[in-house]
Length: 336
Image (tube, rainbow, N blue to C red; front, top):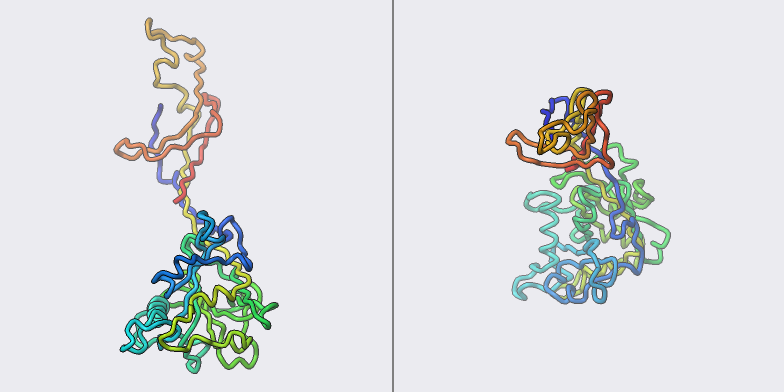
């Protein structure tokens, strides 16, 4: 084993953007009926707030994995049971509305979603929260495409406008893109829309907000039916039931630390292991060739700190012969 101190120029940090399919089994698109829910979860308290959506039926298959969750928010608290019949407006849907406003718009008291301008304050919305393990660092803008089930939605898609917008909006939750009708990043609203845009994509937190009113103008089947008070409408599950296709890709930046380990012609040609060339009994050289023409085989590289503590080991795919006629440059890559 031989040691050599690395120089500052032997280190290089690089960052690469990795794009991959978001859903389980390395697929980027899910289609109806592959949007399953857990009956146990829906019947629990959490089912009043959101519904987890799985790639396979969790009621029969224990390998089912959560892909995303659907929910419904309402500033007036309609569409769900009141916490207390004597306190109007306080219900799970009101809580969801407040939570998403705080997360996406900041803690500005009285803030509300505006789907396209000051006149489009909307009191209710659907939302999709993509599971953290699915979108990793962020949703890849331009990879989002949602197809709903409905008479007028069979050949229409909801997507973001990341490919065609000249600017990017920034919010307390990071970037925000507008949703419209189109294909993979070229979403636009139809001319004459009176209800504003279809919603917003917040790729850095994995959340999609859908404007119920704008979607309902495109298809009457989506008319809001949740504006009843102190009644359990199963509102979070209504969106799951309406999804026909959902395409998404994840994006993450992987930082890599490259360490260039150089073995010059005069270095690492001998071994400090006595059994390598010295007789244990006589203390003599076993192989005369090692006197004038030594050779070693590099099999691994160990990375040590100044306290002589081993931090990482890099293994070569095959032994690398080293003698006075050869130099070696081994690039070690550390991902983090």
